[in-house]
Image 1 (cartoon, rainbow, N blue to C red):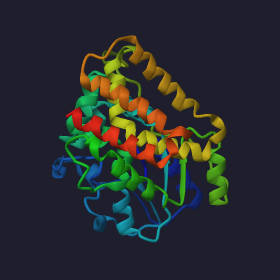
Image 2 (cartoon, rainbow, N blue to C red):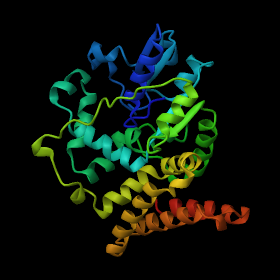
Image 3 (cartoon, one colour):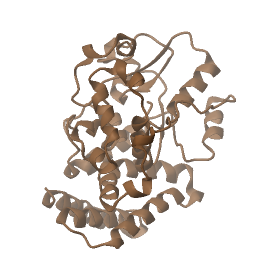
Image 4 (cartoon, rainbow, N blue to C red):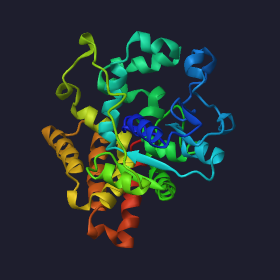
Length: 318
């Protein structure tokens, strides 16, 4: 299950080189397209890699791509499953820059879908607000693990009131993967090779292209207080999944990457007072989630209280 911008192209290529499977499928399903459905307008060169239902997938010994867990599981129930996570705010920013660098020549075969990719040419804050891109921006790992799901809209962001329920279901599903790691783990290649029982050569592929000069902007200027708050809203569930896996495989790292992100958010939050209840609620939610990671929060009563307060913040922020 290839989560976008997690070095999945490099990993897939290395596995194909290693095993040389006779039948290979690389593609996408509907999960990242949200409410887009004009697939007939996409050029056949691209359309042939899009599988609109599990039954469309052909037989194969190796399958990879931006496809939801259930698409893969329904078609290849006996397969071994693997995925790699990445710190979600970094992943969103990488996706924004990647789309921002796409040329018109590259976008042309994608038909009307390309108009959504072109939205990355907007400032970061505007990009993060786009409901039409919710399937790409909003807690993508949760979506890929659980889609289709009645609590996950295809054309809007996930309601925070459903976050705890979705997170529990996603954790359960992720626990069933045969191989799992985070791209930030320096021991990831060695761990993968031990699991495979073979040496593996990973090359850097599908890197973010150079952003055209007219679209270049300083990331420090794009990462405003509002941008950080939107990044937090779009990634808070995925961040918990990423933190779970990071703690499992990098316990000695003291979560350096997570701490850096927390420090950046805190600097922006301290720079000025909140100007709305939504901003104040986002900051309160952030602090509560920090507390939830401590040993003091493991008491069952406190866990229940944390869940209740988070639900209250979500309900009152509507």
